[in-house]
Image (cartoon, rainbow, N blue to C red):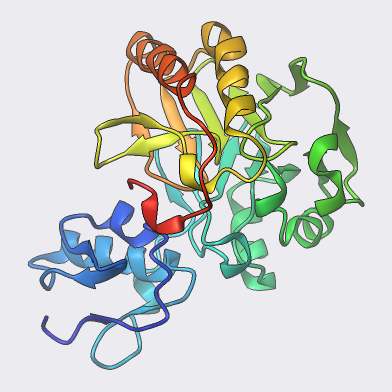
Length: 289
């Protein structure tokens, strides 16, 4: 496709397809290029996919993408930026910067580690906190926190993944951790999974639930639940009525912006569906991205 290709390191994490769905699709458990970009806007979206891909598998014919087209951190709106540069050590999870009215920022989960990237992220705003949603995304948390002079957060259920965390969330009760930001423990995907809610508008859901382009709805990663799908169902039933947000911003799976009432309706429906789920073998290929 005009020289663009996906090499055999692809892990089918869906990151690139989220950023350029009209140019990249899934075939036989990996991404493939559908067609070359037709204009400057599509070229920018394809390069966003290039610089987010955790395995750097999306390549032009020259093998060298245009670094001047690296858009990250990339604003999703006036408050949240997508970090890009996803890490292979977090299975390619997305990470975010949450800007605060005070002029500071929080990092939710972590991109790949790079001193140059740390400088770039800190240029958006001084980062005061690095918030880990669960153990799978703990890689690089300490390094970023130390570089920023920030506090590292994790739930006690996953503390062994970040034993040097500065702040430990305990139990199941919501905890206010900063201006307009609340941690909501949601055990299920892992024992220590947490949602971070900001401003009654943003939900950083980790791997607890995501937006599926396949089903056009909120979904849980049933086939990639490490701790307990029944516990995740109980967590959703316990918290669905209390969660208010417009933006769903997961670690894996697609993002979505909907009116808060619509999100609430879909979250209640997801909680109802989850009650009927039972454990199944881990199978990354069964996720309906």
